[in-house]
Length: 438
Image 1: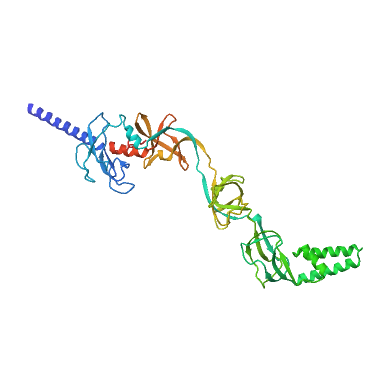
Image 2: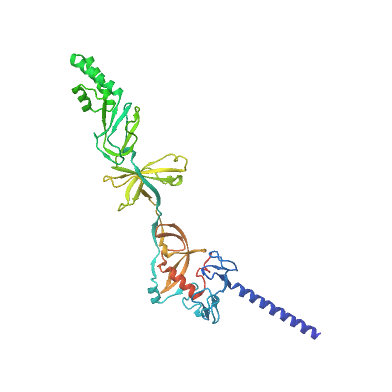
């Protein structure tokens, strides 16, 4: 009986030892994490592949949470390699160097630097403070001719063009400058009517009827494009001009020529287009959701290559319908161009105003981003820094809004944040945010 009792006690002891060993083995496995040799910021709880480069993750022993000051050893080139005894790096073969788990930062997740390290690393801090962050919307456009400053010159009567005085586009034209000579049977008939009415008025100076006929005949010649000087010369010389010279009704630059010598033209045929460049349009195409942010009168800035500063102006027109065969609408702003330096066809950018919201703001370089989110480094003591997870909001060219994770009482590292990150990984052998995931 005593022998049986002893056997039962021995069996119970073996079971207790086996369970204890199994529990310790499970705890040991629970303390193992896996990281990428090339991207130490990637830390996982189980084996797998790096989401950045695809390499197999390698095991890393986590720092024990018990209060210890035992030495561990890491590789200077691969800080994710941490061992509890001296040896060589399994990746590059370098000798491992000692590191202390709580040596540089008495708090978990913190790191302490010397004054010299802070100076050499250009690590600077400032309190988190409220500011305004808004991103400008920039549209790509181009300069086009202001159509309100353009004139189309067309033939007032049918005939044949005998001569063109202006044959090249881009040529500046003054008002009254000859443009072309036209032979027209219709004009000859109107000239004859005018001379006949003039003879009747001179023969019967007191007859209002003949004076009215003369006025109507002169008006017909004016409507064909003849000037008063040309009409008076016909009346003075009593000669028919078989070839009438037509002059520019306004000043401008020739941007289009549709006529040619010897060409027959009908009444209303386009011959020249003149444009004045005292003002010019900047047009941009935008999608419907962008157009909803705009309205006529919105202040914008237009930047044109060759100009020293953006031109401040207002949106003068938004097309109420989509451009044909597209899903874009055209927005337009008018630019002053008194010296004619702005040239149609030039590329331009139109900056729309940002809607600024007040929030805690930081420089973009103060924020470190990875697959787990974003974090910043805050100063928690003299030369001591710790990471904090933050939620980001809107961004501008150099600022970002912080929606949560910081208060105005926090002092944040604004330059040198990446150096702190690297120094932490080098000395602690793990991602500083590995224990900050919520």
